[in-house]
Length: 71
Image 1: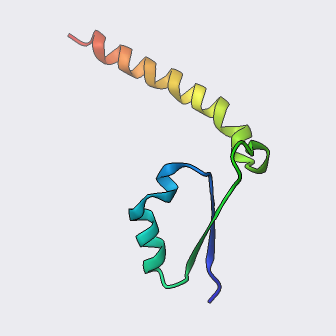
Image 2: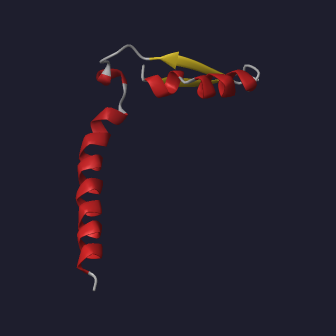
């Protein structure tokens, strides 16, 4: 069986011992690859995430405001 490739950012959470142990426990079924730092152009999600994050953030603020207005 071919491994599943995980292409992740060079963020400390992706290098955590717990994540490392999990990947190793999959007996070669998972393989991690790290993108170089500041390589947003290699991640198509980066073109979607900022507008989506702004929209969700505005909606969440509206929900929080509505909760504070409840008697």
